[in-house]
Image 1 (tube, helix red, strand yellow):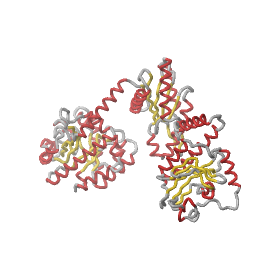
Image 2: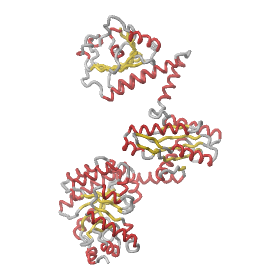
Image 3: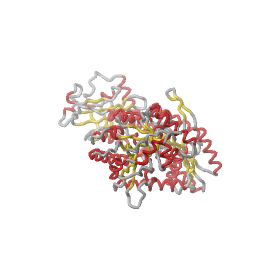
Image 4: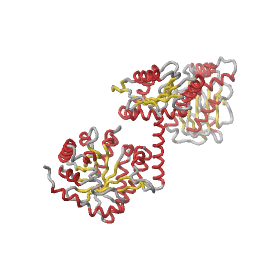
Length: 628
């Protein structure tokens, strides 16, 4: 853009010149804070030229510059002059072909500037006095991306903050002292959480170190408290992230009010807050403080005409009772918080057993990673039979560990692995790949294996492409959808975020994959689930099968489940049949299929073809038993 060509300055120009003089920024030495912002602007916008420019009466002067060999130009050559006269960011994709810029010496010169983007900088009085800009020697038909544009505008606000801080420090006698104060003020600004205005994790950790040093010197105790807002993810999903932000700000304001004067509160992460309690004199006083904290923080907030309750999990650890330093104290407090989440609402104090339990969890995870690394995790298959005919109708795929010297079932390791999001994803995909390969081989060999059931955990449904991935596996191997069954427990259906679960199950159902509800009768919403979700099969929990001949209540429950399923056209499977007596009882109650050690333990894939053909002879005679 060419420099000003107006007959003379107007009132806005005079206000700008006065504001620049008031800022006392012109011809000041380079400062690290401004240089850093120019560096960031250049990197984000991938531009070789970047400046922080102040537009004076007769010149434009660069407070910080990158990619140009001079620190100022005459106002007639000013590109930024047009930006300060406007109100918004200005982007010129090709200055050589723009009517305002083609004649500018900075553009017309060899290797001149072809692309330009600048965001206005306002003085504390609100008058635009300068520009943070980026430029390139090549045109950019696309201009800036949305993210780059927002970043450039945000950096302009940072420059304005620096100008404000400079104004506050201007009366200092020595320039060096002013620079030190500016640096300190900037560092502190990076230690505040932008949403809640509470200190962030960085400042919290520094304060925790200080509190421990004070306690060590005075022989007192300090407490670290972690507070987690339960169901915050559900609030975001239910009402949106803007509503979640309002909940966080409301809670932060409440936390700021209830924390004692000598204590310290901060926001540590998404929905996690921390409090440092200094000078904890005795356990009774600590209990009273925690009880008061929990009661006063428990409240409600109105968001989008909905009442949202602050439901909390609280973990506590003490120095020096539970830790020797700040790092260990934070680790132990986090373990206490995890336990508090498991106990649903009860504040939990750290105990040594939590560390031992955590180490056990970590050991089990490491064992699972090693088993995956060495390809020792494989599927075994347990037979399902028709209780009327003894014919094999399908198999359930179960994870097994073929590591030498270990139990193949390895229940503790698999429970830990499937409960961990990352390990669950790795193990689930490794097992499903093998299962589909086995199904393809059996199908090619003409083995009548019926269907294979895969168990799906809540973490599987966190992957929004879960259903599509299974269907693609079937398609790639030319397998019919009816060859696959997906088993879910009621915990999956009762968990947070039911929408992705319902979407995945409906996608599978529409393609012809059957859905089985596992451990039926042990949850809280079984009948609702039969209506809400596409369920083709219910598996009666093994606890009812085990006591079927000894408990009239369980027998009545099984009879009711089978009758309900039959009226809805849903197939029933009795899990855990281990004796002939249980087989006869479940057949008399009208159960369709059976599964358990009486028919077959889980077997390797190589043994499936023979078992698929023979089925199990002991099931057929049960057809003669009728309900008395």
